[in-house]
Image 1: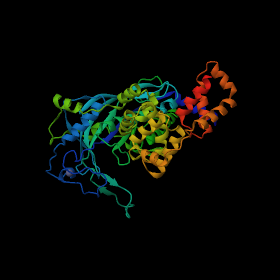
Image 2: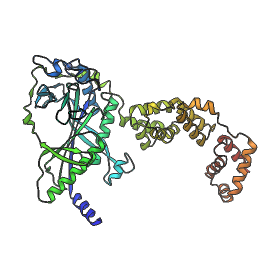
Image 3: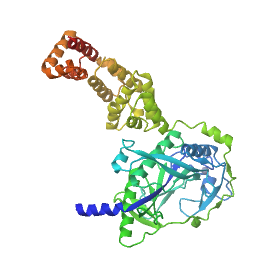
Image 4: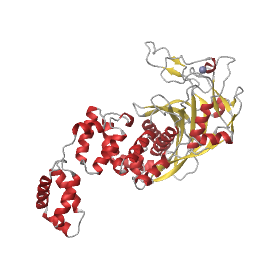
Length: 505
Ligand SMILES: [Zn+2]
């Protein structure tokens, strides 16, 4: 078994995967891209439709300005150059959920080009990559070929009806919902890198606020192009496309599977067919769906019902002014402003809301670093255990700031803080309320604490000797022992003070 695996790994090492991703993201406009129908998700089927999005004869599109602004903002956040003039084009194909028989998209003159995203990467094992921006990781720029605007198609419903076995139902509510398509360069070299790219991309888009990037509702969909080539060869191998995978984890699995399949085919003397494949997540395999269309199959031509899209310098400037601080910059600032590690900054900026929440607590508290530790080790774990987002936390950020200050001043111990957090989660109440109810009983009786200190010092003569020999860090050990003996109820400030006195003579 080991031998087979070793051989497989050795064969795998002789090939280099080449991956490019196409990501479709719904824009959060209230109305559709070319008509005033609502884009609301989950409305009854075929209620948000009109002659324009149904493609009835004679209906004319009117471009939604907000969609242009959102697309431009996203493209700017992805470091793209915005083309002042871009052209809408018809992409012709037949599909039951595309009543017009064509999709309005952009072709040879897209809205934006030449962008990039920086992703963490590591020359070494992929585990380092998965650990995010850990030690030894470097970063790599993945090029973004283009960002263009287009309309979505409707949805074919193949399941959920009594006669689903013989009928497909159509919901055209999604026809004309604005999308951006973000096409990467074939710069990605492993499934892990693809996963990182998608994670960063999603994060950046979320920060811009132009999409909720909700994969369950189809607000982000991803197609992957993949080929392999012998390591060291410049020419790309024949690629296959994996369509519409709906989770980042599945993309990684699908890519893993495809890489293995390509190598097996090539090693056995076969040739890869250029085709579109579907990923079956239950089996972890891809299946051939159809031969891949070439661009000329779509008979692209400029959309005659729409003027060229002009986003001039003045408008671009207005849009650029709305660019928020992006995740990478925010992480760097948080590291320097609050003295956080990169890993902690990474965790705390996972979503904009999380970063906002953390910063509001960090600014209110005396020691931001303590707030970071509290949020990461005491709050996030409890939230995760209950399946809550940070917005749903029973403990508000003011509560976190208050608790951090109480520990900071020594008014409560870390152990008591954990108990209070547990109670806050049990009773779904905020920290100040719990603190008021519990009024944690602390031992502030000097004699009792002195007695404990004496016991600790007597039980640890060697450590006392070390302390007196100049190893003052031992003090932390003694404090810990006293706190342990008191089951966390001794007043830490008092313990420190009394210990100092005892040890000084
Ligand atoms: Zn409409």
